[in-house]
Length: 282
Length: 318
Image (cartoon, rainbow over the protein chains, first blue to last red):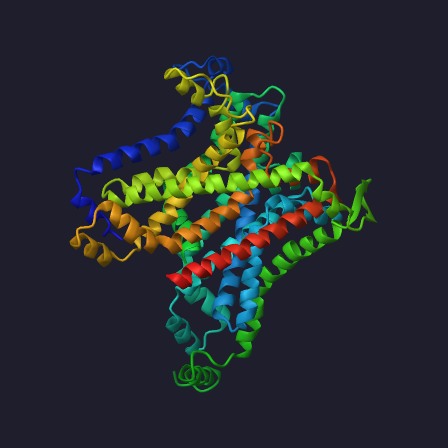
């Protein structure tokens, strides 16, 4: 893991171009985000005039959060409800499925068929799925409910969650499992007292990733929600669509929508890195 | 335990028997029950929310659907919708732009992501700091990235044109000029997803065997030769996986386009997901939109077959 730095020590003189390239790249990543957050603290006039220096105002955040016409707090609550509920449903389902597929005696072709279907499903554009779900949910009267949206998000993230949890379940030593079985442990006991403690970090990684994906999801939320159930991305899209775009309020709402991303980046980064890389590399 | 006779020791004997003839050769009744119970939730979810709606989608694609008072009134349309697909100019533009977008964006992300990963793997300090910064765009909602760049690329006050102005270059109509709008959207996507490629490549680079590098150093290979003849060949599996992941996601692009350009100007940034959205939801053509969805899913499956065969070939070669 640490070894590549060995190579760095040989070329101290040639390290400067690398550092400059990395600094420039970091600036390219950070500047648009910071500039947008700053735009949320500006008046519309200041932004339109392209002033470099400006005195920050809280007006946009007040408008977005507390004005009578804005429902951003409701959207925020909706996103949290849908994100938490769909993550719990998705990760619980995926963990059991990963255990079943990897450690139970299914026929190989059945496991392959199941995983192939998750792969195909994962590749389908969400808009195509949204149209299918919309027609189905409308037929049973769930097209504008939280239930429909939660089920949709949980299903949307299920393939990724199953693959990730499979990686973590496979890392549990078989000997431990066999020892527990020899002691007469039933499957629920085995799951709770042997498997679960060992895959807890993987479970956390998958949950963080699933929540972020649900929080970020737009196409399906747009199709399956209405005013009362609209999530944050749907609300932000509305700001951009209005006849006269309230740029600074759009910036303020964008800044608020990035909060979970910032929290995850600062406090749960190792889970995200683990989740993103394990899923693809293994 | 004195009363160790009974089910427990029977299970132990069975397990030991199983160990001798390959692990867990005998499935107990408990295990068989739980084998089904643990898979059941995922199975039900996928059947009810993926297989069933997709079957409905196929069915709807042969029908005309009208909504009368919340009730769907369906009539048989035969192959009409599928025939109409071939004459749909918007679909043609959508497919062409999606292909251009996916190839351009993914190529840019792969090259930049690889370079960044290589750079970060060469430095010893501040690795985690750079990783923290680069991870940010992956976590931001696509719609917010659209909002960020709608502001950044604004003709009048966007930072992009302000910076160009500083060096004396005229303002560019990033999103309003049909000739460069698609390029702008590609740039935004590169900003969004290069960090993802970076992460995967960095993980790949960190897991490469180090003895090979020491050998090349003894042979006196230059940094360039090392990259070309050692690093790249060893990274082929990671590169293929990353490419497959990204091309699939690029094919699904919707959020940024929805916010930045809505497919315009004209059809300059019309991508397939947006075409689908317009036909199905905006124009409320459920039957025709379903047929288009089926066609897109078919294309996706073809891409999957191609990707899997490419992966098999690369693994066979490695």
